[in-house]
Amino acid sequence: MKTKKLLLFTFMLAFPIICNSQTTDSLVIKHDSLCIKVMGKNSNSFCSLLYEINNISKETYYLWIDEDKYSTKRERIRDYFMRNKLKDKHSMSLYQMEMETNVLYGGFSIYDTFLKRIKPQEKFTIQIFSGETILENKKKQFFKYLDDHVVIVSENTLKQYIVGLDNFNPKIFYNKDFITIPLKLLTLR
Image 1: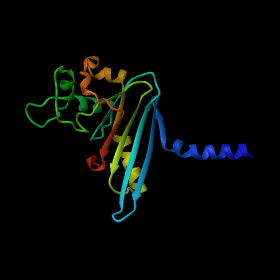
Image 2 (image 1 turned 180 degrees about the vertical axis):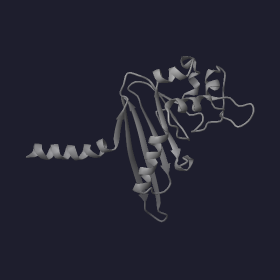
Image 3 (image 1 turned 60 degrees about the vertical axis):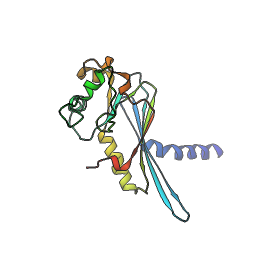
């Protein structure tokens, strides 16, 4: 009887995790959230949405967050790497920045210059942070937004569109395993 209870308990613990994850192209993507309400004289609420990408393959993947939705992978790659990032006449594309060996730019933008390389057996987590409670239907909306706007492309696919990928300046890649983005920076459409 103890074994049956233990198996049932294990299944009940694993079921929500299985339901909130998806596997594509040797990647496991999990959605999770944690909301805390601090009671006291001035009660506060905090909410964290976690979008975890686990590379279980033997291939390297590249990840960025695209502000717009495109129909094809080719359009997403070309637009992200080849469009000018700054809105002035002296701007350069992300591709030009990455090929430049002495570039030091200060204009970090989650939609324009964020690029993460996820090597085999590595994880990367995007945390969306809010200083207030997020209702369940809004959580689903934000996870859907991330599913639509987080672009993950294998190195082999990216090499088909980006000449000289191996020569990119390593400083251009985001080097942490975790990024926190305030909820207000996301542009839900």
